[in-house]
Length: 304
Image (cartoon, rainbow, N blue to C red; front, top):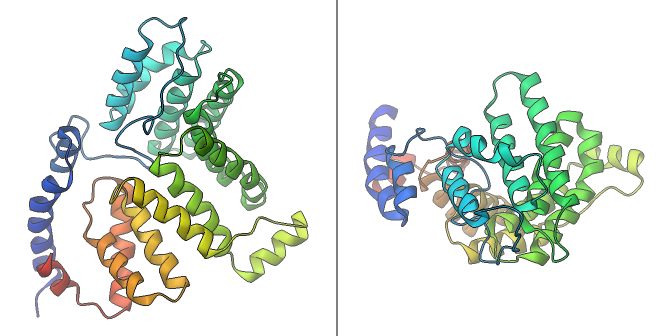
């Protein structure tokens, strides 16, 4: 029988060979192979571009706005959070929503990286205040990033405050995700997050639903079919963009009784490159699922 260490070495060798083929951009390849500054850290909700193809509103009061956005997005996409923060924090007292939501985004990432719980909570609250300001000053045509990141950060704050607060805030989270997609329907991560929203409430245990009903009267509800539509839309827009989306596709197919498809997507999630902390967590979850389903991991790795 092959040892776990031997299997891991086989996987690692094939992973590194395939990973550099999987990512088309030089920045992404540097992240995967460990040659980018800042190490291998990554974050949730990364996209290949900051706007998903929609045109940024023009604002004349910030000199070199397009250049600042381009530079800080590049830093963020390479997970150089402190570098991006050093530039964006200078604009925290301003009123440009495009810079404010980007500042909120990096403060949110700083919160996720913080080890101390008190510091983490303070940073999430700071990020929320900044993104609220971005919404306050959004242009009439709307600010996609402000709505997207308000939804993301609001959910983190709800998690800090407890289950009751998180359920209460979930209505507003969905509202802002849907508004973000009205402005820009080409962003895969926003479709993914909305899919997670639907999956969470479709998958809510009966006893939790009863407790929520007692508190809220009519708690949020959804279906696995609604979740699936969003995950599939995200995948259509940007195939293989996020291992978490692949794993959620597997989970949703499983709940819907489509076992063959679920197995296929668990395999895909397991074999996807591990770039971020999220990817590492999904890799382990998919591994555990496959073991329960009787899949021989060594054989799967060898066939990759």
